[in-house]
Every structure is written in structure tokens, then in C-alpha cells.
Length: 319
Image 1 (cartoon, rainbow, N blue to C red):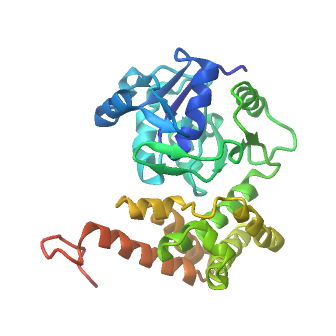
Image 2 (cartoon, rainbow, N blue to C red; image 1 turned 90 degrees about the vertical axis):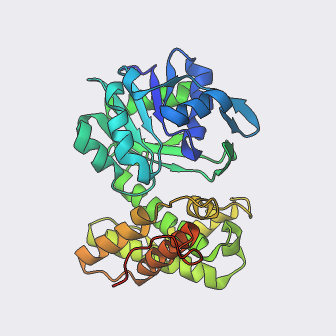
């Protein structure tokens, strides 16, 4: 199995990590971005900027889809259902799919549509600031992680993706225990992303505020407890060492949920805290910090919609 054709849906923060290198190494004939309507027109007219360099990528609509070797899904969780429908023409008998969304359930949703024989587990570890079609990040600091659930011995399809990543000079890791790695990333997102979003603080606040750190770790331990109930172990020392990763993030960088709130966009709070509350209830594990995040960030979304300042804006009925 040798991969040389790639399609990407979702040319936002995560997509901008892949697209320039895929275009450079594969060429416009072997790499394409999936988009339609106003988004297609905007990308064709304006392109995007990645670390100060302007790019225009070849665009294909869902209706123009032809099977590719590797399909990258890099949309936000709120757009995943539509993306699953839009990529159908790009999935052939040999296509492998990496769905690099945050969270721990996106692969199941993609596999429900296309089958597990097409889906590998994957996620991103990178801090990207995205504003007005411009992405800024340290290209040496990001990495995509992917693989089967277990990777003591690499399967042929994992080896094929690895070869492509090497060819395109895309940093990657293949964890031996992919599920545990995904849940640890999820714990980090819950603790860091949502604390920053609710309080309106950058990553650097965790280096100066004991209270912010206490909230971050308390939220991570809720994920740890729910994961343990599902047979997935997140070691305590790994939670404590995460502060060293935060030290390497530029002090003023803001996580995606805070960026969404400040831009007036819908956030992924249902996938983050909503999923944790639901899983906690199913396992009999209390998740009060995640419940607070869920309610609090919903309120910030309502504030962005103007329901507290404009009496003409409809709000959901109380009770």
C-alpha cells in the first residue's frame, strides 16, 4: 500500500498544519481541499495565510470527489456530520481516513458511515492561533498522532500513512496505546481549553495562578476518573507533568474554545464538557467541574448571541 493522493476537508487551524506541506510535496495534481459554496469562493479568492505565507490550494466540491489514498477530516466537531456526508465521493475501497478532531468519539462516527477498515485513530498536539484566515504556529512544535488502537506491531495501513508523513515532512507519532493517548489529550483539552475559555485567560495563566492550575487539574482528574471506569488508565504523574508542556506554549496563546468565544463563534463545548457529563452519568462518576464548564460556556455563547442585551432575540424557554 503506497499513498500519494490526499484530500483534506477543514482548512482551519488543524487543516493549516497539513495543507502547505501536502501541496509542496504532492503537488496540486495529488492534493486537494474539499469545499463548496461561499467557502469555496472565499478560499479560491483569498486563500489562507500560514505563518505569514499566502497559499491558494486546489479546491474540489463534494460533487467532484474521486477516491483518494488518504482523507484528512480536520473540521470542528460542530461540522463533522456534514463533513462525513461531503467526503463520500473521495472514499474508495482503499481509502484510509484520519479524523483529527478533538474528543474521543469522532472515529466512531466516521466508522459508522464508512467502516472501521477505512478509519484509523488520530489527533493533533499543536497550539495554533487562527484569526481572519491567518494561522500562526510553531511548525517544529506540532505533531499528529495516529494508529490502530494498539501499535506494538504496525499494521500495513499505519505503515503506509507513516511513509506518506515522512515523504511530506509532517511531524508525527504512533503511540503504542492509541486509546490511552487520545484520552490523555482529551483530559488536557478539558482542563486547559475550557478553563481558559470560561475565565478568558491565555495558556500562560497556568504558570502564574495557583487557582487556575487547581481548576485545570481538577477538571483533568474528572476525565481520569471517567476513563478509568471505562478501563483506560491516565497516570497521575502524566497529569502533573503536563505543566512542562504548557511552559513551551507561547505565554499569550489562547486555546480554540476561547478563540471561538472571542470571535463570536459556536464552540465545541458539547463535545468537550457535554460528552464528559454524559459519560460521567453513565458510569456513576461525578463531574461537577465539567458541568460548570458546560453551563458557563453555554452562557457565554448566549451572551455572544445577544440574548441578555437585545429583548428581540429569542432565547430557549427556561425550566
